[in-house]
Length: 324
View 1 (tube, rainbow, N blue to C red):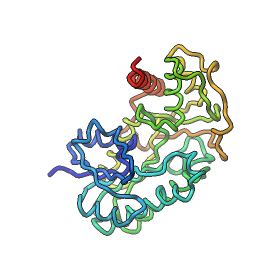
View 2: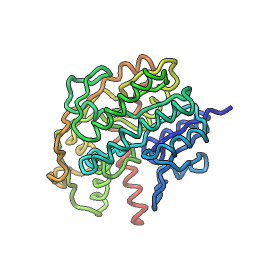
View 3: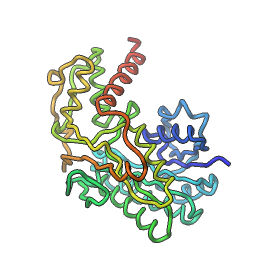
View 4: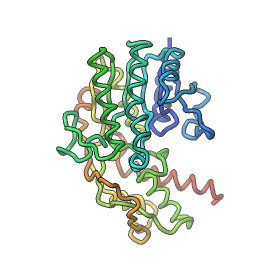
């Protein structure tokens, strides 16, 4: 019998890479998609005939429970969220309902349908926020600085609570920033690589951006989804920080991306107050030692390789779109 995996958020960056990975491991892969007037399957179009999509919504307990009853998966990966930090200030209640309470709905559905299901919760480095120690590890206290970060803290602790209360194999992966050519355009890495490519091709003349001094621990999403799977293969459920252990500033991101195109970022970049956060997170850098020791996981793609990959993909995309 093939293992069955159920992924919420399968149409997102992480969902698409995880679905690819699980297919290679021989799984039957199911994904939950929310019914909207315009369905965006761009990231999974190349594997859509190999996976099964189930309608459902993280706001609706019944649809989540029915999906689990119909599929009977051995593993559930919860990647669904309102995941853009900036939007969480504009839509704080919606962010809380999906990103926080949605986790409870899914955990309770697992408890009801089949407590043997192994559960992965996508926690976030944004939970550390105003960091209490550097680097951040599994024992570092949380101090979230956005409604998104607060919602993720709730999702993290309700996962721990269901694990301890109902003996579920429930694990949280505290993933630091992970990027790819499939990243949404609103995220700073993709915004930079896409706009730099547009400038190189004469399709734009400036990049408007927020805080240049913020530092992040950036890795490749394709590496990070393997860590999710490794967590659910462990005998004992535990929480893990997944990170590269190195940090780079937004200014370094600009330097690497524009240099890949033989451009000087300073000639094209304008700081814009609109992109400054009400409460900034200045320095995030993770300690992945536990994941290295217990999971045997380590990142393969360097920061420079990642940004180069994204710039090249955006150049190809724009050339195809504009017949260049």
